[in-house]
Length: 222
Image (tube, rainbow, N blue to C red; front, side, top):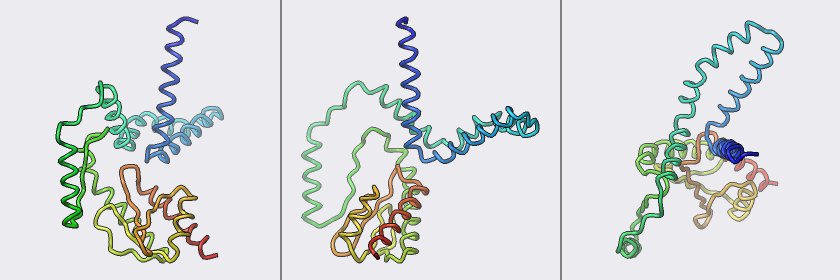
């Protein structure tokens, strides 16, 4: 086997691995599964000589690229941003002198005056796109709050950001049960709990979390 063959196989394997990782983390994975089902129906129609069905689906695949761009636009943008960051990064940027001391003094001052604050530090992804999509996090938080109230839990106060605070009767049992279901909900003290929506949480993830919370509540009621 030639060196170019090894390189060719390695590149294909890398592309497949990246595709699988991307599929696991994309919020539109259900839509992609739907496209794969349509593709399977198309292949079956071709095999069974269902000419009309195959003709209709063939027209669908003619515009499939545009459909995928529309459906996966947020996930594709994030993917290409990550590729750009990875490709352009030579070494971790040096922390400017005095930044850590300034942050420490600011945090200490906030603690002394008992003032809440949010400190945002640039990481791997551009901050600009997160500012634009904060409304999505707030909308998902409200969706979560409505679902919690439907389950009989008290949401207090009503969420104004991406943080949802609610009350449960058995905090220890609730935390144990939700974490057994791979759901991280933090206690705040007393009977209060806190849940947070963020970049990797979409509407379908909120619904899935509500299902796990409902299971945990049923388990605690036994």
